[in-house]
Length: 96
Ligand SMILES: [Zn+2]
Image (cartoon, rainbow, N blue to C red):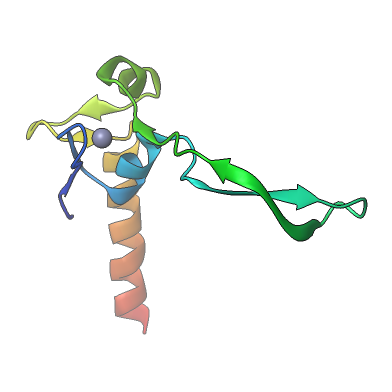
């Protein structure tokens, strides 16, 4: 299990999945013109600013995440899921 500390809010997450969930919004990029066919024409209309940000602790809790003993934020079912996955993995190793 790796440690995923956010460079922005300094919170530590127990999984990459949990880390990803606390980052919302869009990366900055270009806005492309959409043609009549519904596909981009290749013409750039402008730039889109980055709206990426970290969720607040209240928002993280509202998503069902909890802090474990080490103070890392983990997804609600992650402990049980991890156990299930490790069981699946060890089973696979045995049968192969
Ligand atoms: Zn963060």
